[in-house]
Image (cartoon, rainbow, N blue to C red; front, side, top):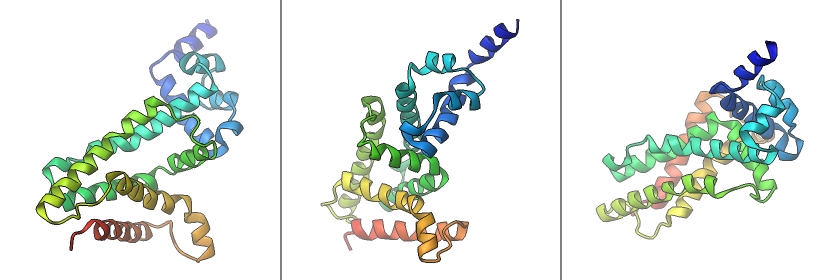
Amino acid sequence: MRQAKALKKNKTPGTRERILKVALKEFADRGFSGARVDQIAGAADTSKHMLYYHFGSKTGLYESVLEHAYSGIRITEADIDVDHMEPVEALTSIVRQSFDYHCDHEMFVRLVMNENIHHAEHITDQQIQPNRPIILRLSKILERGAESGVFRSDIDPVQLHMTISALGFHYVSNKYSFAKIFELDMHTGAARSKRRGLVEDIVLRWVSSI
């Protein structure tokens, strides 16, 4: 009876989501090599059998965690109605959203750092596809901005995306070392808001036609 109840619990709709949540922290903290499947299963209140049932293998779980993590930032970008904003407002909104997402999801940053150690060998087509729409959105914003005369016409949307991502990513990935080396307060809301304003200014000055 106890075994049947446990199996029923493990097959509930929330099991997969619990595993993904726990696995994100485990992989972010320990990397792919250091993470342990039994530790993930235990922390997710399930069994290794059920973990393999949902994800097939440790690699399958890791790839699913990457896909889930990358889709998070893309989903929040899609919520911004940039088509009904003026180009400057639209670009500012994307910059602000990207910066805040990185600050609010430190484990995402650490996960990406770990994956780069592995030369992105676990990045699959399923993870790549959701990341492509942001380039199209930025292209349209740049085109509208150039047509209205507020943006330069020679900005590469891929380079723009890389710059926006890098500025948010760097603030999170280096905040502990920078805070210690330069005696900076980088953990308060005020410090974050100040840096976000600088990032917005950097990007908008670069693309500005003035």
